[in-house]
Image (cartoon, rainbow, N blue to C red; front, top):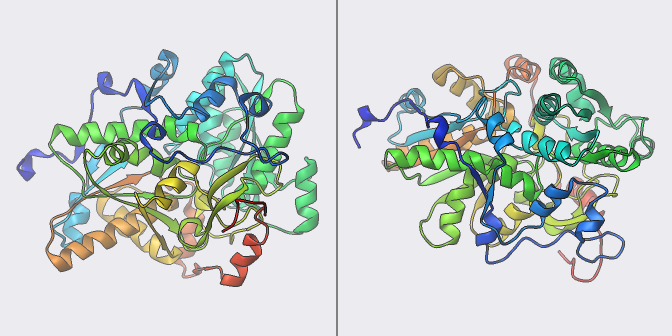
Length: 461
């Protein structure tokens, strides 16, 4: 199709919003390894997960067979308040780069939470309400997930307790206040409010916290308060399932114009955005119907894919959660207090870990200052202020487009713009003032985390 007929924004109609989520596991030859009970080292049964998660979400978490799962009408109704989100052509960025590459991005920042996280927050709050619960607990890093969950809980009339990584709590007071506006309580983690928080503070005085710490606190509160369950914004199978609406919409929009991406790029922290974006494309790849080059981009300061170990590990610093087989830096790894935001989790989704291990996708890590250089260039050309997390994908998309400039190849690139960066201005300020540095852990730093990975027969790495 001629260039002039492809609009800047490709919109779907309300009727074209997906009515089913897509479950990549159904098409995976090698399924993600099951979660293990840390006490028995046996696969967890649904009844063992019941004190932590909602019943329907447990069923989704363990479902390896159903390729498509119906989205309840109540969730569809909420989706319609901000979906479908646009798939956009980065014409201005292409021109600035002087590249023959065609660059598209799926923009998920067109809702009050400012990110893709609302897609799963709505679903998880809905199932909690359906089960008759009083409320939910969670962690948040950069704050997008906590904001999204507070919105969803307000919509369904649920109490929401958020444990926010301490460095983000301090750097992003306005993100915290948005959560409180929607009725959530927000506690900097690690805190003195929980037994596991007090233990972490005793072992690591003055720590700036991590997602692993915050998860431990949120799980403890959920399991010790009647009528509460824990919900998570990334990593879990159920979350990638809910986020598949991103990729399903992107693919439907591109299909309208006969566009097939050669390269698909997503930032990777725990895996929610990347997994959601690539879902239908990966499905085609798994079924042998099409091929794509898929790139996961992570911060050099927390390189779980590129420098981690593929092993069973705890998902939380307090070591009270189930064991998951994933690419991990060790649950005791505390990343630097930089501006990678929600990408500072020590592990990775079990689905994405297995796909990466089997060679269906690749990964790269990028340094912080180069990420903000890309973010600034994107903001100045495309007019959208990107979140730091999204900017990791922007960095690699620009790099791939510049390679096309060198070779003359007209490749089509699709990346995920997870959200906006309006609550991340402290990071932008440090970048503009020349105070931002690149922190890359040494092999010795990483070994300290690896030393804490559980050791048992079959978990060699």
